[in-house]
Image (cartoon, rainbow, N blue to C red; front, top):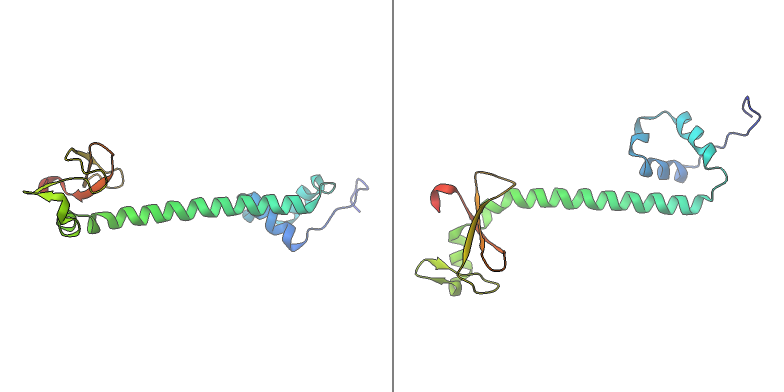
Length: 140
């Protein structure tokens, strides 16, 4: 019993994990802060809260993994998708040194700086926007 006469609920392990999943800052909080927060949740059913917290945690983990994968792919792109790679991989789309899009067949080409690495330029299709290959500015 507390000073106010209200019982202080204790949290089970799954409830603590759910609270940490919902509130990322709860990792730095002492346990008594989490138990005080549980006072507000004592009349709420715990199963929907656990399901909600698990869902939120999974969404956050998915977004983080996708962002990390996108960053890793952006770092490897200049090493993989070069002009020489494009000519070797798609010889049917090269005519006298001019490349065409492997998706739509267009000969229009747009050159832009890559947001991940400003030292590299992305050569993309002028019609459909697909990235064809990456080159440094001097080797255009």
